[in-house]
Figure 1: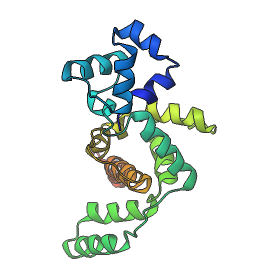
Figure 2: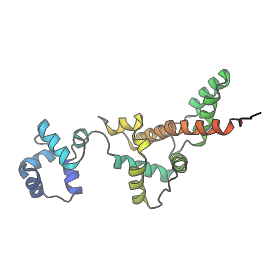
Figure 3: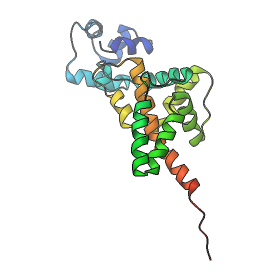
Figure 4: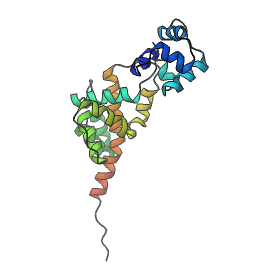
Length: 203
C-alpha cells in the first residue's frame, strides 16, 4: 500500500488542499490513495517532490529515517539484542583469531560480546561523538534522526531505506544493531590499539 494517505494526514491536508496545491483532482487523488488507480511515473515524481520524500518510499517501499529512528529508540529502551544468539559466530571468530594470532579479530570478538545490545552500543556511539541522548522518547527519536548520520549511511541501513519488501521490527532492530556494531567496531579497534601502542622513546 502506498503512503499517500499517511502523508496527507500527517500534514493535515484535505483532498481539497491537495487539489489546490498540486492541481490533481481530489477524486483522482482519492483513487491514488485507495489504490484504485495508479499515478503515472511523472505524477509519482511530482508527488514525491511535493511531500519531500523518495518515489520508492511514497510507493510503500523501504523505511524513512524517522521510522528507523523510532525503531532504534524502541530498541534502546529494550536494551535490544539479537533474537538468535551470536555465541556460535563469536566462538568461530574467536577460534580463528586464536589460531591465526589476529589481535584485531580477537578485539572485535570482545567488542561484540560487550556491546551486543542497542542501549550499550548507542551509549558508546554517543560518548565517542560527545552527544547527550535525551531521556524523553519523542525528543530521542528526533535526536537519532538528526545526529546518527553515520548509522544511516551504513550499507545495512541503506538497504532498509531502499527496501522493496517488508521486514519485522525485530529484523530491523537486528539490522540497526549490525550496522552500529560494524561502524563502531572500527572506532573501538582504533582506540584500543592507539591506547595500547607504546610511547615513542627518543634517545
